[in-house]
Image (cartoon, rainbow, N blue to C red; front, top):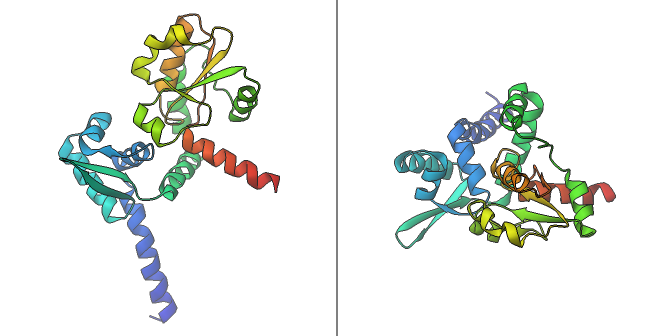
Length: 223
């Protein structure tokens, strides 16, 4: 075996470590959740429906591949993505998968088909209308995720608190809700609640990471 062949074999073996690590659906979900902000093992177990033991095992695998990092906070172990490029990779994976796999498109349409007028508002349209003061953007994720990063101008109204804030929402503006991204249903649920109360509302499919990607792409296209 020549030196170049040996070098390439070793190189792709290292690349395969990441691929092998990401072969688990549950580990992909854990990365998506951690991309929204640091979370304790117990919190991740509740969000994913897994046991604490199973979550810990998946997180250890992700840690060994250096996709997540951890630290202690009192009696809890807190996990986070290792760096922003991990979230960027997940956005690319989502886009590629949705483009290539018709099953994903079917799953998205099936879960939303029961909702009336649930067509999402485009990011470009949203930003223009926010500048004009025509819409109010609600971030319906938990407060800790909002604090870690949000779309500028968005107001934090966690999903479980939405109905308590209905009377404080302006009646003369459309309400747009967003959450963790294209595969999070909290924004769709929020829009259903708002519309059931006679409030004009729309869903933004993208989350904060997709917004960042959109802004970066817009800057590049303007150069």
